[in-house]
Image (cartoon, rainbow, N blue to C red; front, side, top):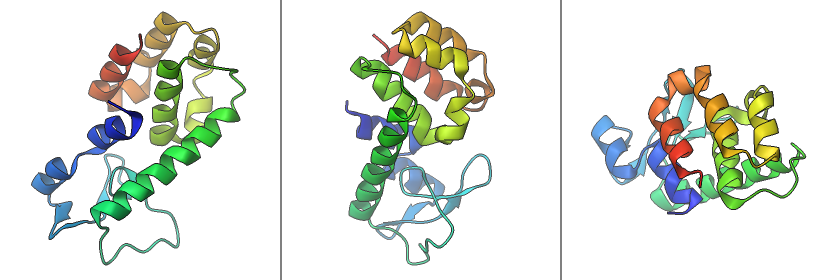
Length: 147
């Protein structure tokens, strides 16, 4: 499963969102995430000036997800962790997607473990966090995806 597919599952597939009423009449609609922020599609945090009052088609949601992954990938390069194995890179991109650059930068020990390619260290640091307490199933799955 590629990164885009994993994020779509973590953030809520079209089928899951249909059960919640966030996907109806062939479109995604704005909803409040677990922290109360307006969100649409596959976990896109609605930014000031963005208007989704007419909903978002599945194709546009895929494009938006690709842009958000690209943004997270660019943010990863600012962390100066060197060349990372793909599983660790994907892990950090998912973190950046969910928590933002400022949130991820608070994980100093986890980032040091990532730089050292220390998967056990990454797992250990991730479970001792508010992030884990808020989204335990996602973090457990992410930890299981580390090789």
